[in-house]
Amino acid sequence: MQRVTVTLDDDLMDELDQLIASRGYQNRSEAIRDLARAGLKQAAQEAGSDQNCVGVLSYVYDHAARDLAKRLTNTFHSHHDLTIASLHVHLDADNCLEVGILKGPMGAVQHFADHVISERSVRHGKLHLVPTVDGGPATDHGHEH
Image 1 (cartoon, rainbow, N blue to C red):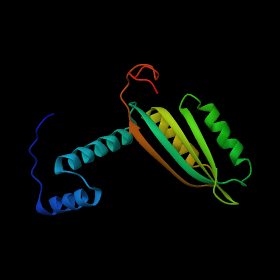
Image 2 (tube, helix red, strand yellow):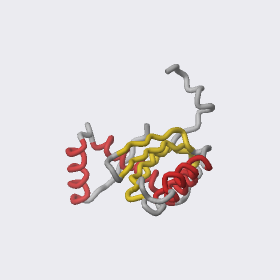
Image 3 (cartoon, rainbow, N blue to C red):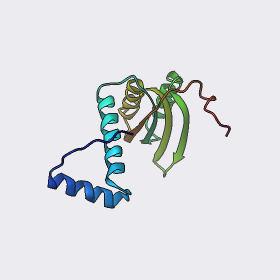
Image 4 (cartoon, rainbow, N blue to C red):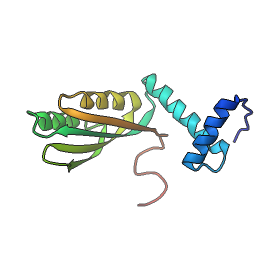
């Protein structure tokens, strides 16, 4: 660990203390570390980074829209190298929720998610990215499941 001294104005410190209280951080250092990680993740995303990540893509779509389910399925099949798993949920008579777990270079995962979310009749979509550190093959991570 490195120790860093940072000077913050009173208003910013008040906002940080409010965040610490609302999220239940044990101390300011934990909150600042999380904010730094979030900022670095956002900067990498904006730069179209090739850093590897795991992504959770969730979206709601109109299941009755012409050929949409087929187009979405074909999109996931054509990007099988990024797709780990998916979940399909019937929300009501008109809407379905799908959640896709993706893994690969951040830029490629973001591009794929943008394509899915921009499909006509996809009503809501969100991608959550978590940067990963490569540690060899997926099955070689030091413990059994």
